[in-house]
Image (spheres, one colour):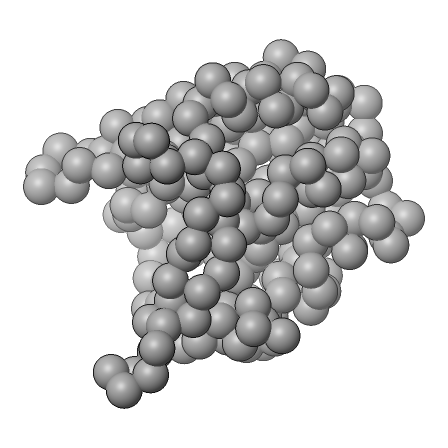
Length: 220
């Protein structure tokens, strides 16, 4: 239950999504940690009626955009606080939300999906040896898996500790994350049966920011 508490805490700390983006749109897709930066939903190739799954959907902004594009949008998050926030923020969006762990959902669900995505979500915080084969089994032939996260710190690869701060008089909560360089993600995706895998680091936008965003994509 430590992970659930950690992500509930994170939900309370993360600011609310803007009501519109720089283009004046009320829903949009953002793979990076920077607003109005990087590619959008075209990475997933969403078609009307496609079944789309967000692993670690958080407050549901990217999933709401998938729904606006006509997808059957399904979101999974381990935090009930995040699920409630998503439902409150997007009451009119056609989204189905599940409060559960990503691998458990994939193993227990009978659904299959045309696209699975994770934006700084469950793919970063779940052992790929367990999660990738579970995704592969639920991805329809030719379907897309895409995910983004921070690039690894040089020399720090594999399972790492990630800290979520609480109040000043409390120790931070710790969750695990899995950091790999792009070439290693390509190898892992290939090993678990995905085809045409790619992974790259998108540079940060101009300005003082220096940390890019790792974006990976593969097909079922």
